[in-house]
Length: 171
Image 1 (cartoon, rainbow, N blue to C red):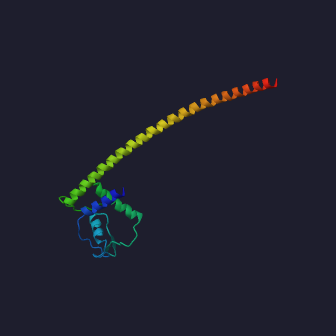
Image 2 (cartoon, rainbow, N blue to C red):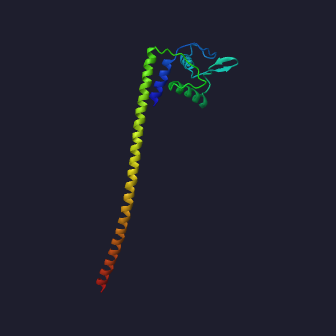
Image 3 (cartoon, rainbow, N blue to C red):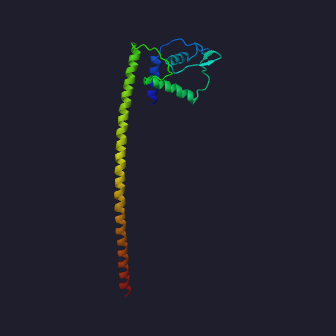
């Protein structure tokens, strides 16, 4: 699952076009500058307007809410769902990298579908096994009650024979 997520993130980086977005608090020589700009152009990050200036606030902790919004935007891009508030990003469809990444996404979807089929088959097999175990438990319960009654009669019979043998021995 981690490798699939990593592949999706790499795919998104490859699909994004580099364009200038001017965050006032992000210098062009910052180690994450390219990634931040690509994710902004792709629509995952929007930036924060503070005092009339667009800021990224990269040293600020990411809340679970912000993470959820970014992941929702990512999944919408992957699944080709366009929510009302999403901004469009120009992607060159003739680009060989994009075609390669599109093929990889198709392969990933096929692999996920195959996995779903296998999971469904396993769930059916587990359900059948569960039913079979219940049937066997019922058989064991019914045969053990018959065995218990047989043991009772055997014990009573042994007791009677022991009494008769004691009477003969004393008499």
